[in-house]
Image 1 (tube, rainbow, N blue to C red):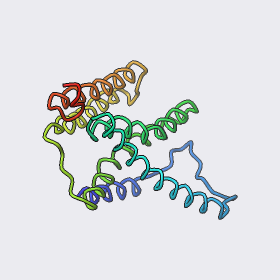
Image 2 (image 1 turned 135 degrees about the horizontal axis):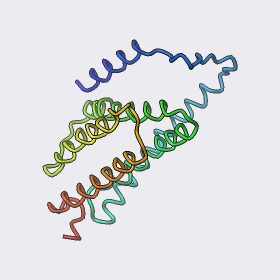
Image 3 (image 1 turned 90 degrees about the vertical axis):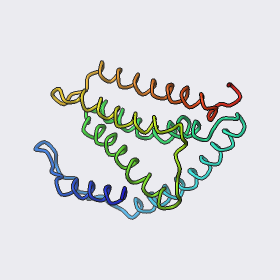
Length: 189
């Protein structure tokens, strides 16, 4: 169902896509076969490095006696978000905030529908009894971001700071809340 929702979203997005009046269509006159090989090589590196990322994260969790959820919610999340963060910051600095916002919104939709959907197809997953709060906080944070954007569809620095602080607060709360059950850092209980 998640993958079907993603396909519906992508189809809807594609059918409604229009260039704004100030954008010129991109025509690749200098396209070479080299780009295809670079793409394939990059994909192989990405798949190989993700294997090592998961194994290293599991080893860290075992070494420090904390749960894999904590490692996933911190180290892996930060590591997989760095390319998005870099892209968004560079796009914003260059005055292309549309790329930045599209990247962030599209990434979250793709993660929630595509990644979770594919992972569910590969293997049944179970959420730990202490984790549903995290799942409820996610739509609340999206609602807050939309509330901030509804005023002339602008995100000011002040609103951005509030969103960053809310994100940090969610991480801290999630770690503290889950640690009450001894599932994250049992040696600190």
